[in-house]
Image (cartoon, one colour):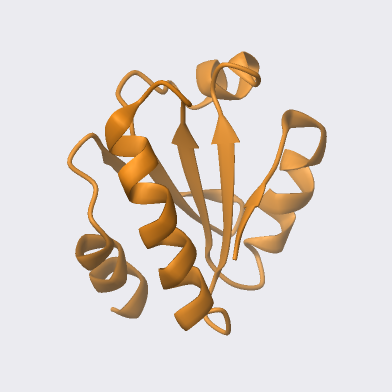
Amino acid sequence: MLYQTSEKYFDEILQESKLHPVLVDFYASWCAPCRVLAPELDSLSDNYENLFSAYSVNIDTEPLLAERYQIQNLPTVIIFKNAEIFYKLESDVSTEKIKKILLS
């Protein structure tokens, strides 16, 4: 499941990444590719829920997080490990690329 999150809980999510990878989808409601990607990420996270956690962040309601992670293109997916950025995918994001990163 792709859980919506906010800046208030983000540091807890980073701590969670010390146990297993955490995928964060940065999106905006007006972004058409983001709307296509979201259900695919939701399905991917359901299929591999034992391997990673998945969250989404709306950059319009969480501009400080967008600034913190220098989100300039949408969609952007960041995979965190050990409370740090492990991999950042921008614009041309696909579930196949994400699976390859997470399963390697």
